[in-house]
Structures are given as structure tokens and as C-alpha cells.
Length: 118
View 1 (spheres, one colour):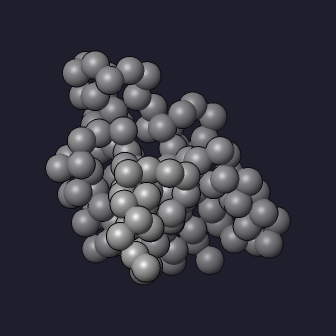
View 2 (cartoon, one colour):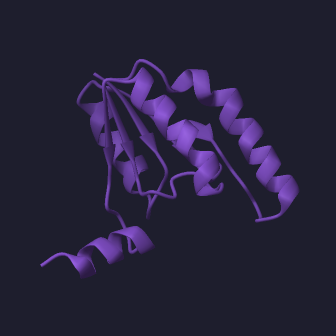
């Protein structure tokens, strides 16, 4: 099975990828830090670093196709503005079998959903 893990939270995706590889799956980890299969690093929140991050995302986008499973850590899975990340998310949905959104950590959307649900 081909699996794409996007984003990172306490090294969760990297550890998951190692276990899945042991089980024989083909796994790619794309995260905003260096040291992963695909680095989508954005060192600061400056305009130039944001532009560089978008260029890296666009460069690697064709590699994010034809996966059986894609797992995203949270709604802010790329370190760019939400309106710029939405087309990437739509691309992932269009070009892959299944896309899952994880609830890792305490990001705003996850906490809000927990607070509003009985």
C-alpha cells in the first residue's frame, strides 16, 4: 500500500512511517522540518520564507499523487495561509484514493470542535 503522511506532530508521522515500512508499505513523510522524506520547511513567518515554502510545495506537488491513503495532521498542515493551503488539499483529494484529517495536538479547530460537541 502507498501511504503519504503530511505534517508532523511530536514525531508521530515519522514513527508511524517506520512501523508501516517494517510491515512492507511504501510510505512518504512530507513535513515542515528538515530530515523527512520531503521537506516543506518554512524557517520564519516572513514573506520571503512563505514564498519559498509555496515554491517547495508546488515543486513537490506532483509527488503527492496516486497514494492509497493520505493522512494530514491538522487543518494547518502546511505553514501557509489557509486560503493558499485549500487548493493543495483539494489537489490531494482529487489525486488520491482516501484522505484523512487527524486530530493531533491542540490546534484551534480541534479544540473548538471538542468544546461544541456534547
